[in-house]
Image 1 (cartoon, one colour):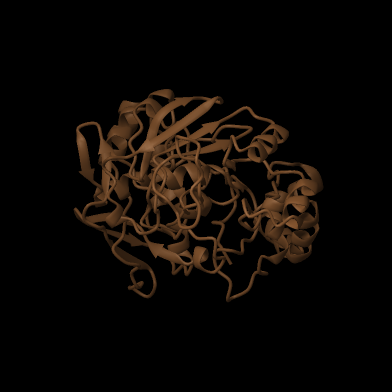
Image 2: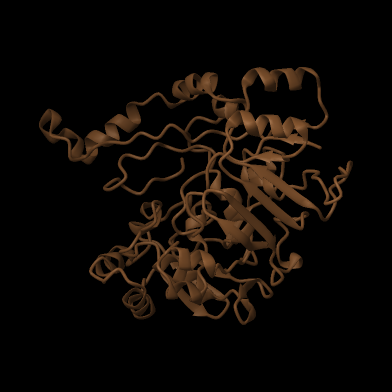
Length: 402
């Protein structure tokens, strides 16, 4: 039984050897079949891609939802940061002086809709963006897109006035338009930006940018009804789920492997047991009753012992840390309300020694995220692996990868 740390979304579908149903452990090249068993302290923050912001939840999203662009599942640190086409046939070149991106969707990329497999179409992509600023529960990553996509500010202002119930929200989504996200035809979607943004293709890999099937309009975002009627586009879908206790993913029969070179999807099912302490997860990993950890690390001393012993069943995936976040209270009266001034917040952001902060935090973190100190400093040549901290949650300018 391999002992692994579930520290990056690439691990979930990367082909780590796992226990088959009869308890045998395949070795060598990745095998198809069996059940991947994961231990967790907590639950996913959301099952709705539009709402998630918790890093471990990206593993669930990767298994169940596809985006226009994504990343290849790989343990190679250079391979896994290269953006690849997912639902899109290819990564397009920007036109209109860097402000327009036109994507063509792959044929055969399907939803597991209630009435059978259904093609993911351009209108699903548009619907995904329209849901982000719904008045019931808007996306925590809305700021990435709202001030960048043409007309989205105005669209969201109108949406804020709508009664936060399924029927009126669905009516608004179906009638109001975002000029910057347009379905040209069934398989072509066009994005128009207010200004050129070299990081836009990286933003489209976020779970927030996932298409949304028409069925989601029948329910409040991520409500119990939404979860009970979950519609997947990835290789897995929800088989069983009890909040804060357990989650079982089973194969999505509508998914076609030939349309998805980024997710090998070796296992037949994925079982996640929640409510376990970090010590319990570590013990079960060592005992062989779990394959991976979801949201807990293991004690550095234990990791050091396993690494020193060169245990062939022990593996980690380095993942640059994006914590801690810096939250700023823009309503504070201190210093004559200085933090309400965007220029003051920008000054704090630029004054922060990010490289030194990374090194300090790396010394305190568990092995699963200890590579924070190796993350590149912000520069003109770094891309999605380098992030400036957000200035505020409510009123910050659009956060941008360096």
